[in-house]
Length: 286
Image (cartoon, rainbow, N blue to C red; front, side, top):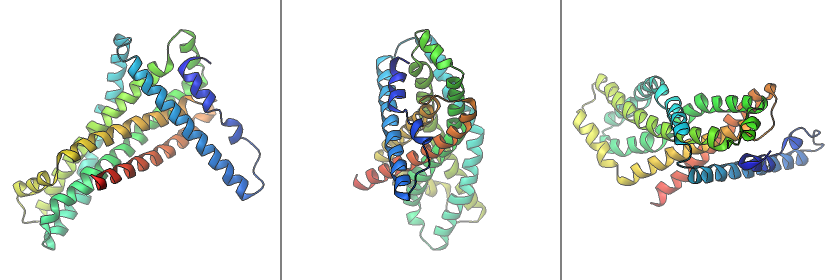
């Protein structure tokens, strides 16, 4: 195996540790798990850096081939999920936003409505829920598709033809998922806030639409928009990296693909929570 992907394969060759004999003690088991975690972090880091390098180095390379693939991934990670996200936005507005507005109005605390909606929906729940849904829907498909291609030898065939698998298979997924999560988050936030007011209106809350949206806009600032864009792009980038890494970075058999998909989704959830924690710290220090 040669090229960019071969470097990751060398760094991520941990199957020997996964299939080793059962440890004889708890400390041995814990040490093995820690060692596997460090190897996985190393492999993911190498894969992320290689992908970034390919994106920068081959940004305008083979545009006639790459642009349709990127549009396809944007459609799969964004446009095709819009009906589901409209339903989720409606449900989120009725179940969370509307009840929050009603409770604040009941206790005469509507002055805190804007800041509450910004913290709960705009900063936290909207981006994180979007990332989890896209991970479950598209991230799993990435692992299955790439894992099957790896098991059937299609990746090696691409390299034999002189095609960089990272550029052809990974870059469109990374760009498509980053843009998809960013766009879907905006739709989810707007839909949840609008349907939330509808629920509050049905509950006869004494709050006009003008006052409701005025409080929200006054609670927002330029930092919220900037960090929201960075956060959603980071979610998309790292979800694509984790899922594509597990689909390609290990020699797989067809029967291994489902097991690897579960592992990739689990690690994707962990990565999303860690990214969210980093941005919470950024919100607090800025």
